[in-house]
Length: 145
Image (cartoon, rainbow, N blue to C red; front, top):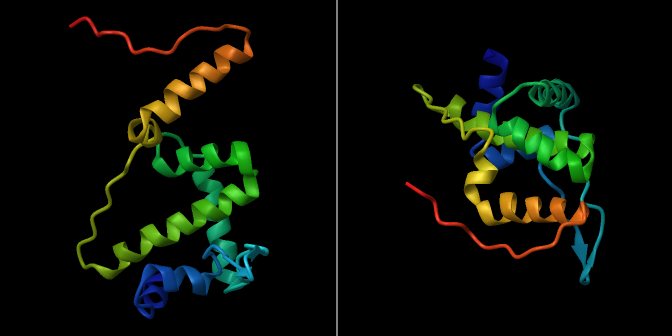
């Protein structure tokens, strides 16, 4: 833990620490053409340790990070999802190491459902039903309270 604190303290922002660890997302574009968005190699020991942490996060339950990992792994693959979760983990850890009395607020496994219910719940459920052969009109019902 002390090694992480001393390393994180050397950087002014979470973004610069993420770049040093090699977990900042790449964005290469020249003359209007997008090239590879691969991350840089960064610090190999840190990256190896953080990759293990990301896979451990993927095996946990009821956290924001596992919800993000599973959501991304469906479409992008497990390795790509692990790198994205790693970046989130690094950006989350950095402010906790900077303050003497850190406060971490867990967003919860249902964060994405609460953030945009139309996108996450309604549309996905409608797609599943259409895939099963059902048709119909989407309209919210009145709750009986």
